[in-house]
Image 1 (cartoon, rainbow, N blue to C red):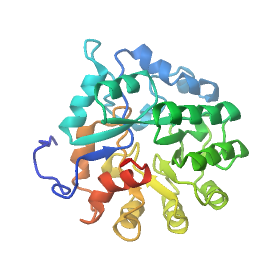
Image 2: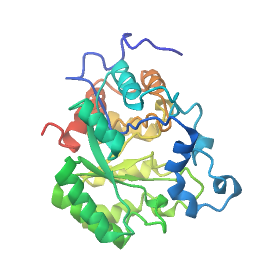
Image 3: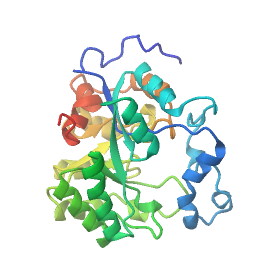
Image 4: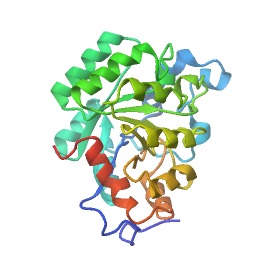
Length: 301
C-alpha cells in the first residue's frame, strides 16, 4: 500500500517537532561498495552461501532492500529527500566520511554513533574518547556477534567500553537476540544484559535488532533495570514483538524508541506505512517517535 506523507497518521499533532530516527545510513552506488561493507564478517562464516559473501549477509531475512541507488545519484541528497518526505527531523548515523559530510551540509539534521571493536581494548577506549571530543558523538554502538573473535555482551573486554560510556555520560546501543548472519548467537543472549546492568547501574543501554526470541525477557529486564531500553532497529512495524507493544502501552512507554534501519534493510515508506497499524496507545507515540530519543541521547544539549 502506498501512503501519501500528507495523509493523517496516528501521531499527527502529538509531536513537538519531527520524528527522530536512531538508525539511518546512506545508500551504495555500486554492488562492490556494498559487499565491501560486510567483509569484516567473513572470518566468522563457515556455510557456503556466507563464504561467497553475498552482498548482504542477512539478505534471506529482508526483501527489496533500498540501499543501492543509481551511480548518478548523490547518496546524501537522496537520503535527505527521503527523511524530509517522511517527517524525519533528525537522524543518528554511524561516524564515517559520508556522515560527516552530511552533517556539514545539513547542520543539526544528523548526529553520530561510534561503533566499537572491543578486541582492541585500549584502542576502543581511546577511540570513544576521541570521537566524543572531536565529533560530540551521542552514543556508542556494538555488534557482539560480529567481532572476530566474538565478544559476548558480558565479556570482560566490554567492561572498559561500559565504564567509558558511564564516564562520558553517553548510552551504548548493543545488538541483542538471535543474530541474522549465519554465525553463533550466544554472545547476544539477552540474559547477559542482567549482569551488565547490575555491575554498571549508571550505564544507559539500548538494545538493537529485536532481542528475539527473548523479547519477554528483555521486557522483564527493562522493568528491573532503569537504564535498559529497547529500539526497533531492523524490524518492520508489522513484526514488532507483541510483548514489546504491550509493554510500551503499559509500564514501558519511556523505554521503547523508534529506529528505522534505513536504508540498510527497510525503506522509510514501509516503516511509516506499516507503523500506522501499530496498536500503540495515544500517550506512547510522542515518546516512541521523539521524546525518549531526546532524553536518552541528551539531544536538547
